[in-house]
Image 1 (cartoon, rainbow over the protein chains, first blue to last red):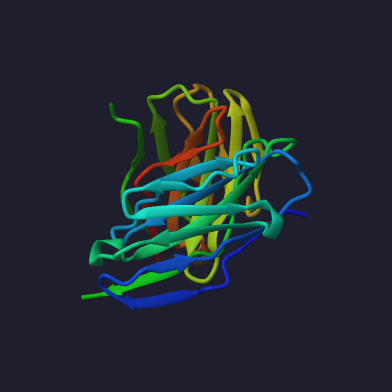
Image 2: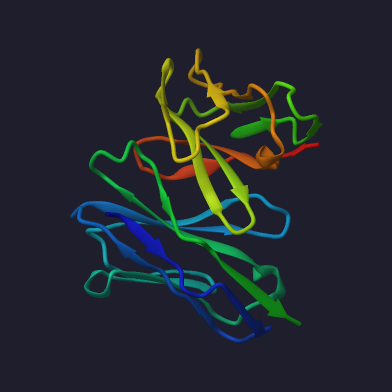
Length: 116
Length: 111
């Protein structure tokens, strides 16, 4: 059965600290896709990144980086030098390529609070 | 480029009334989805659609009806609103890369 676990319910750090959000997934498929979304206090859901299961290269986009490790079924998200604007709820999600009807399996989300 | 829009953005209604939430996307994406988001439950899928005239139930479909006569529109109807349907409703669309793009959401309050 597919599942996404975000064990950290809430993280609070001081601005400029680095912070890592954990995501662990379960799937039996060999082809799947992993996602991170951001939901700021304004409420919209913003797509951040998509990785497929055949691409384990880490990704860096500015202060954001993602570490995908199939061996540990993890897809962790690191924010370097955090800023107050990074305060949001972050969701990790999984979609299996076979028989998923393009549905996403969602983690419960991690609320990130960046204190000035 | 409007992307995906939802209307109304805010709605207050009374128990027992019928309410329709609209979702419109300009990308011609095949797949569309309706979610509700409640504190403590995260995002839960209500209904989804693989194409015009093809819809299927998600995790929490009871009390909701959908239709999709045109690719770009995917309205969600609450036939007889209940207080437990007070929530934020998100519409999303997707194409073959599996990425879902979300509308801004509709905040529905049922009194």
